[in-house]
Image (cartoon, rainbow, N blue to C red):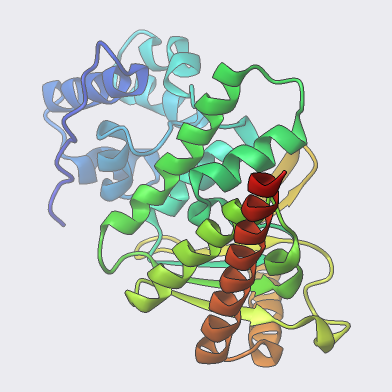
Length: 289
């Protein structure tokens, strides 16, 4: 397998880039290939390449093995905390990394537009609602971080992305009519570019398989699939095959009762039009006032 080429990261600006560059230097100094080191650490050579490229975060057990194998006098364990720094909450940082590596991503969204699809204005409204006393600087930092996740769509093919939205997500006016119109137009545009598949689960469906809450499914070329489930200030990455199988079944059940992609697009665009009409009416009322 060809070795992963390092990204052009500036070690002086990124602790993880420095960490990855040091791992690459020490590995080459030990005359080991990525595959050689991966075998000794019980991971794949591509995983070592991702560590060196700053894509993946090294976990404590890997840091300890790297120090032992490469005889680095504890460098990787000592500097682990800096290398694990992320703009995301600790329980979510690995999810963001996995999104960048996934071949397929499937989101079930019972309450909100998923972060990968959120516009800046929508994200800002969600963040502000969640914590009304945040300073503007912190809000904008979080908006920027959330927007950065959408770079996974820069590749025209990977990941293959599918989302099922509860109709309530379309009807809840997060940020007001103008923000919602922009948000729904953004999703519709991605569908029309054939970049994502979106379905809407109609309110008329009643009880359904996804009532336990949101989750995400991700599959990879060289690693087992994972599921992610989120709660208040917490989240869990789940790789137990039985749990992933159950989540996959739940997603399939939701897709079976959701509107078709074509009918869903019609509903999304109709809702966007309704929000645009509401925004125009509100603007006219303000002008008259």
